Amino acid sequence: MITEERVSGYRKGKLTVFGTVALIGESSAYVIRPETGTGLAMDLASLSALRKQEIQDDLAFTMVQRGLASYDRSRDLSAWHEDVRPEFFLIDLTKTCNLSCRYCFREFEKNYPVMTEEMIDEISSCLIAYWREHPYLKLSLQPWGGEPLICLPLIRRLRRNFDRAGLFPKIMIETNGTLITEETAAALKEDRIDIGISIDGNAVVHDLQRPLAAGGGSLRFVEQGVDNLRKAGYSGFGTITVVTENTIRHLSEVLEYFANLHVRSIKLNMMRRNSRNLGLAPDPKEFGGYLDSLLGYLYRLYQRHVPIVEQNIAQRLLNLVHRPDNNICNAHGCHGGYRMLSFDSLGKIFPCELSDFPDYCIGSVKDHDLRGMVEKAIESGHEYFRPKDQSECKDCPWRYFCRGGCRSAAKFACGDPSRLDTTECAFNKALYPRLVAILLQDRGFAEYLQSGDVE
Image (cartoon, rainbow, N blue to C red; front, side, top):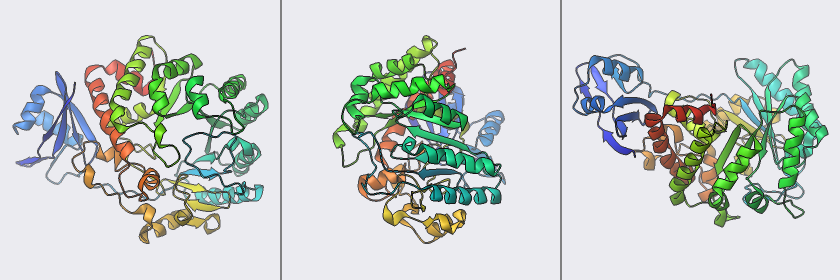
């Protein structure tokens, strides 16, 4: 059990100790500075000395290293500025899909055009020129949908355009898996396309939530797609699952299904409420019980030496231990526009694939200056880039990592991207203290949660 306590900041001689939050376990504590996300595990005697303003030089030195304190003229880690450097690009090939998922956010206009070969070439040329101008960036491209494999020739054309330019970005797709024939799997492998498969678990949950557009369950087609990927030589693909009330009700069966499917990486994304199916979205009050069940089941897999990692948990553990800047959504709030951009099938550019509202278009593929395009939108006060209202986050120890959550989710929920993403907020408040408890009490399990390693 973890208790939370605020420790006030103070100055003593040349040392300034910043205000922190202490997460206290039975024999140790984790102290975190909310402004910077920097933290430090310490024994209870050290925590007592911190409270009494009696810390010794060795602890003071470590706290300065971790950004929890500073000496006169030392650099403060809180002076952080986000640069505009897009390097992850969604390419929205089509809004057509062969499934009719009950929680989908996307608008599927019947007459919305599929991307043409000419447009994929124009987008390729734009990104190739951008990368050559900024060769220090590490570009990743994600053809998107609808169902992206409906446009497999365009995905292959994208890869060939970059190959001819002598440039080799990471290209990945998230697919519903139903269209992966043996021939398609071989083509994806040949073109070095990374794969994520959307599976909501066993048939009881998956077929209920992800039916075919023509009617009937889709899981048997997904499983055939997975088999075809393995025949083609894929071993490292992961799965993406939307967590709904159904998932929580059948969580143990869903997780056992993934263990038996022998995938190493799963990602359980909490459903955001939307106007289409409010009844499926879990109540934030349920998050604690859900996470206890999830972590409990993962612990049993750890004891069984089953190699599997849940990526949302792994990312947040990474945040606590290393404070990285590696995730566009969950390492330091929403980086839409700053680190990612989305092209639609007409060549219009948006800050995020879920922000394709007509008035959120910030430019066109013909504009070419991608950084300048974003900077202009920010300077003009574009609604998407308005600073998040974090008044509710002031005392939250996890605010550095969350920063108010997803802008697009807030837009869908209440029409204002600067408002709080209440789902992300509740999820972080429920998950982080549980992960701190694991870090303090069972480092072996913590390492398993980060890597899935069972050695």
